[in-house]
Amino acid sequence: MKRIVILLLVITGLYIIYNQSATFDWFSNSGKNTTQATVTEDIDVIEVNISSVSTTIIPEDRKDVKAIYNGKDKLTVREHGDAIEVSVKHKGFGWFDWSPFSKRKKLTIYIPEDYHRDMHISLGSGNVSFSGKSKNNPINLDELTVDIGSGNMDLKNMNINHFEQNVGSGNVDIKSLQTETGSFDVSSGSLDVKEYTGAIHANVSSGELDFQVDQLTDSIEIDVSSGDVKLDLPNNADFTLDGDVSSGDIICELPLTSKNIKKRSIEGIHGSGKYKIDLDVSSGDITIR
Image 1 (tube, one colour):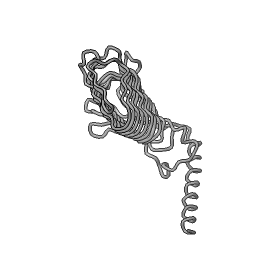
Image 2: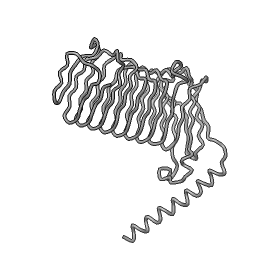
Image 3: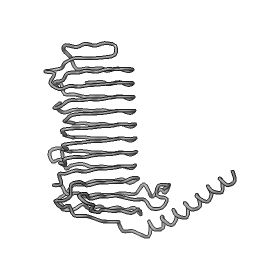
Image 4: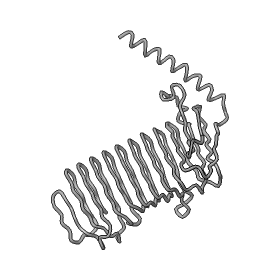
């Protein structure tokens, strides 16, 4: 027992020494860490790998990827094969950072507004904000992949051919997203999507999923292990509904024809029935309104 106490005291002492020196460095270094890499025709993907940082991604009229960071950790922007990688790596006990100054860590990433290929964003923890200029002037990408371990993300004004998002534990707000294929995997957290157009394939292990669809243009498939889903569709949507429930409820507030409602299933047609909506609920509730 004494050895454990001594070991804890040693670790705490080392942390205090490191933190105090890092804090001094923070005060003594008033400059910002800036680096950049040119986007050439050979670049097919921009990769962002960050954690414990508040990040803003801004598209603007430029030919390179530029990042500005005010923290003490190592910022890297480099070209690697067909990719440009932006990362922030914590030094020493950065993962053990209790310092109040860690809340002030801000990373701003500028990307070319005419870049239309792929982006991959990996967020361990922290906050990310990424948006186009407006709904009528969105950011255009072929593919956007987002992986969130534990953090918050705000996405707005996007036109993406293929969108994929995995949420471990966190909160995601999306507004004005148009896509051909949309894949959403929520382990534990909340996903709120507004002004959405495109196909939907969603898996909810434990969490909340709220979709407001502007225009139904493709099929929807949602599997819920444990959680709640709200699906807000336009009144003129054309769909055929097929839902199964093990424990929970599927409620459709839109009028259905050829409907067949049983204790554990619901079937029916709204409008012409053009697009298929498949719902599978193990434990939870789905509401279509």
